[in-house]
Image (cartoon, rainbow, N blue to C red; front, side, top):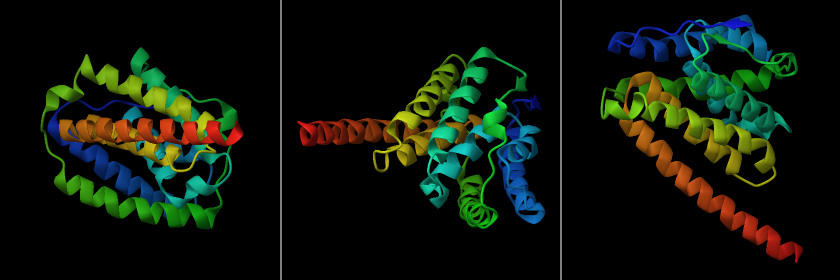
Length: 210
């Protein structure tokens, strides 16, 4: 099991969670950590939601081009979101997911691309429309993340769909971490675009077959 401790809901703790992710990204690079299990252990001491954010950001980077990675990350997003819905205190993921290893050079390049956006996001997030990030609405956001994760393995062959769904999860995770409802609205807007793209690509594929 991967032990995670949710911080208190005060504003300082929420801000610190983004800082902790940035620090962890630097730590991962410094220590040449490559397995998913080790990555999540480094992040797990913050909370479930930063792990969710980190995994979704991985899919947005060029690492998503690695065959099967979007499916693996999608399964992790689904499982983490489901455990958030159930109110679990300890994060659990199956060994076949946590034992997967990244190529160290590709991972380092991907982490470099994550670090700068996280710095920027930390500088602009504040408590806005915070009611959108609290129960019962927050449970709806967890459900959206779970559905996005569950869909990724089935949509991996459709261009851009996994990246868009991962962007939705990343924005919702940022909203939950920083109590910034604006990011929740942005995430749901991107979700609408993702659904439209999936329908369009699905129709195109269907017509090409018939």
